[in-house]
Image (cartoon, rainbow, N blue to C red; front, side, top):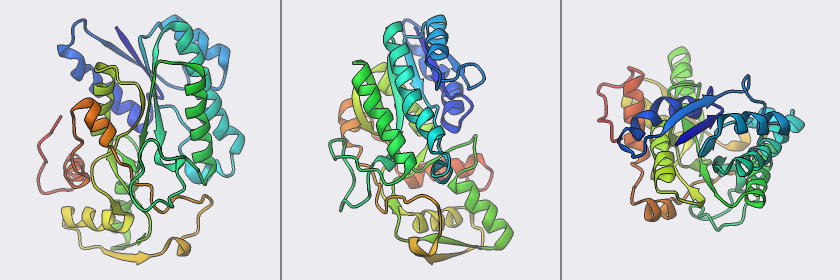
Length: 296
């Protein structure tokens, strides 16, 4: 059995390629895990995608490849749709031809943020940004093309292999001893180590459909930043600002928190809290006074 991870040089992709082999050690038959990046396969090109996947003959394809720079998507619109929509469709077509199941990583930004409460899988998407629109159309392309799929919507992702909100806060705090963070954007942060294990659960239990997967609990970005410096012990002032005071190209949802009950019920596994995940991550960076025990 073979798992192919597309987008293997991204933050989640790299974590998956490094962690999945450890998760699969106890399986019978054993799984092999391979990663592929843009240099190996251009998912925006249908023939290239079909040829590569036919050659590799995977049983499961995890699509982590995406144009994820939310603000840049507003400028590079064609490129965003080429990767996030056309790329997803090409992978679904090639996966169907190869008899592979598709695990597709999507986003909380498919929602408009107006709901009073956390979003469930049956809530109707209404994306505000080019990024959100291109990712939602990618979801639809997969559902229209192949029957064996799992779409995983996740949010506020951070991890070891790429600059993210946590490392940005630490860098800015170290330089300026103060950061300004919005108080009116609420969501659910997700540690790639935890998401990697959740993806393995979805693969091993052959779960299908749409699932929301994130660490448990909701916070504002302001609360998230405050917790970062509380855990590190750094003396950094976190200054509250409103979204309207922070100019950016893309319009983002004010509330994009995800309800993960469907995943919990289907898998029997509950994601740990965002605070616990953050403690462990800061420990891996050497910025926390202790290393939170690895729950995986």
